Every structure is written in C-alpha cells, then in structure tokens.
Image (cartoon, rainbow over all chains, first blue to last red; front, side, top):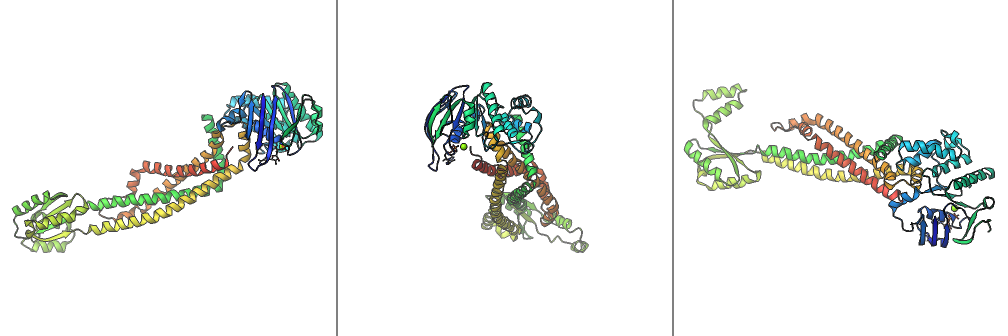
Length: 226
Length: 304
Ligand SMILES: Nc1ncnc2c1ncn2[C@@H]1O[C@H](COP(=O)(O)OP(=O)(O)O)[C@@H](O)[C@H]1O
Ligand SMILES: [Mg+2]
C-alpha cells in the first residue's frame, strides 16, 4: 500500500530530515511511526500525502509512483488518503456538521452525497449527538474525533494521523487510539505518527522507529524502544 | 461545475460583505482608475468628434468683382472643381447672397430697412470651396491663385475655424498627456490595492485553504473563490463608473453644448448611443485589472 524505496529528504536549508528510508506498509496494516521530536516523522507523513517531495528515492502509494507527482494530480492522491495533522484544526465558525460538509463541498460533492456521508462518519467517531455544536463547545477529545471524521469523508484507503493524541490527557488519548484501531478494523490502512511510548506499547502492532532521519528499528509487533 | 461556480460565488459575496470596508476602498480605487482611463479615452474621442464637426464647417469663399459676368464665374467654378482635393464648389449669385443676407438678419429691422433703401444689390457673387480634407486648402488656394481666374477675385475669405481646430487639438493633446500620466499612476495604485485586498482575503482564509488542499480540493476550487471575488470587485467598479460617468455627462452636456454652439454635438447623446460599447469597455478595464492583480496575489500566496 505504501512503499518507500531509498527515500531521502533534504530541506532547502540543508536539513537532512530523511536519509535512505526503505520500508513497505501492507494494505490493512496499522503501523506506528515513532521517534523523538525532530527525528523526521512528520516529514514522512508529509511525503506520503505529497506535501513534500522526496529529494531522492521513490514513494509508491497503491501502485502509484508519487515521487514526481504533478500538482494537478495531488488532489486525486489526497482524496484517497485521510489526514489528521496537528496544524489542521477545525474551522471555529462552522459547526461539527459544517466542518465535515466543508471537506466534501470543496471537492465538488453534491448536496445529496454530503447529506448521506456526514451522519455516517459522525456515527463512526461516535458524535451523532454533537452535529450542530461549534468546536469551542467540544472537549479536546471530541474535537479530535471531528477531525478524524473529516478525514474519513472520502472513504480513504489510508489514514495518516500525525500526533493525534498530542494535546490530550491519557484517558482521552486511549479513546482516540481505540477509534483509530476501529477504523483500521473497518479496512483502512492506518499510519500513526507519535512520540508517546505508552500508547505504542499498548497498541502492540507494527512499529517503525525513526532516529535522525533513518529507521533504527522496524518490528512486526513492537515496543517503542529508544 | 455549476455547483462549484455557485459555491465560489457565494464565498466571494460573503467575503465582500465580511470585509466591507476593504471592499469599498478597493472598489473606490478601481473606480478612480477606470474613471481616469475613461476620461482620457473619452476626451480623445470627444475631441475627435468635435474636430470633425468643425472641419465640416470650414470653407473658403471667393468674392468676385461686381463687373464679372455669371458666365465667367461658372467657368471659374468648373475650373475650381478640377483642382486636386476639392470636394465641392458652390456658386452663390448676387441674388442668392442677398436672400441669404436678409435671412440671417431678419431679426434686425434697422439692417433690413437700410437694405430696402438701396436700390441696387451691393452684395457680391461668390464661390464657396469645400475641400475633402482640411489640409488641402492651402494647395487649392495656391492652384487657384496661379490660374487666370484669380484676376476676377475681389477678396478671399478664410473662415477662421482653423484656429478653433488648432485650439481643440492642442487642448485634447495636452489633456491626453496629463490624463495618461494620471491613469498610469492610478493603474499602479489599483494593482497594488487589489493585490493586497486579495492577499488579505487569502490570509484570513488560510485555515480553510489549508484544509481544502489537504482534503483534495482541486487547484481551481481553491483559487476560484478568490478570482471570483476580484471579478465581483471589477463588476461593481464598472457599474459605478458607468453610472458616475453618465451622470457627469448628463449635467455637463448643456455647458459643452453651449461652448460648441452651432455644431450639432451632444456628448450625452453620444454616450447614450455608445452605451453598450462603453459598458463593455468599463467591464473590460475593471475586470481585467482586478483579475490580473488577484492572480498575482494568488500565484504568490496559494502555492502548494
Ligand atoms: N520545512 C522545513 N524546512 C527545513 N527544515 C525542516 C522543515 N520541516 C522540518 N524540518 C527539520 O527536519 C527535521 C525533521 O523534522 P520533522 O519531520 O518535523 O520531525 P518530527 O516530526 O519527528 O518531530 C527537523 O530537524 C526539522 O527541524
Ligand atoms: Mg512532527
């Protein structure tokens, strides 16, 4: 589903954020990418959705080589990958339902389709009752659920979540992880980026550890080792 | 596609209202710009119209000595018609001249009374020459003066319209130069202001834009609303300019008409006649300026 072949990324300022990354993620897998802050985890996530292009090497998503993807093709890719990123929060002036509709509207979805999908994804994340609330009236965990719901509107084959538990307390964080596990069970390949060892150990699934732009360990059922 | 356009239009209108002051200022600047461009072009057009109206009135009158026979005059007329550049030669006999004179002084009883006292027609016969082009007159006069017929001529009258034409040409040229300079300054200001307006709009929607890109909105879907907002600004400006200009012409019409009395020219009628092309021109100026500047802003600030 996701293949990195000798991928390197050097930012324009000379920072080497990825050096010769080589790994493959199979369809239906739940993979945690872990590592210390600055290790290059977010860079990997951004390369998966073509927000950054690799300096060297090949990235293949579902058989599609996106290493040199054209700007006009990027939307096609993004509609197949759900994204939960730290810096893409909810729009404060829109309700929960409106936030989710927005993601469909801007992709040209018809009203009928929107009206069908919005309740579906809200049900998956368990927020059917908060449809008309504004983000500020939701807890941190609930807000994150809406973000996840929004990432699901295109029924993506892949979900990339970068530090989805970043600002949440332990209990809420676990609830979010449970939700991601549930989405994975429903058939979506999940890539979870985190620096929280406790969470990774509990998930007890595949772990790719990144250190200083390289993979330091790649375990089938892993623990977070530093 | 239609759905996308409808959504983008809604977005554009919402934005326009949300930043109403910014929108008003932007429109105001764009109106000033289109107004000044229109004034420059309009002045030129009107100048041309007036000049050609005046040119049609330019002629040269050749007055014959009293003893010259009608036959000789008719020969002179025939000859003159063969001169290069002559459009028309009209013979005005002594009788015609008297009738004309009476007609044009019919409101002046003392002159009419004086005429009636004379038992002889003192008015001379004449030929009125009209050239095809105002520049042809000197050549025509020269050719005539070289001919034998010149000896029959008592005096030659040039109508002094040439001065008016020179005056108008000078004024319009001067106005054109100044107007051009002013317009260029306005165009630059308008581009900067619109560029900044769209940039501010993009900035205040950076979250939406980020989300749009992340969820896979196409490039045109992301840009469309901002382009449409600039189209909206252009449309409104064109509308206001047309309205302002129409009003301006309507109220200055009487003054201009008085200034060029005797020449059948009304700028307001002219404006009405060319209203459609005028509106189209305003739209073109407003929308093109606005869209071009917004595209620059979009290309600079909406990169993926
Ligand atoms: N846009 C960028 N330009 C330059 N350097 C960057 C950029 N983004 C990240 N970096 C650098 O690349 C390295 C890896 O960053 P990142 O992938 O964000 O790490 P992580 O997500 O593991 O904390 C860091 O040293 C970071 O400072
Ligand atoms: Mg990161």
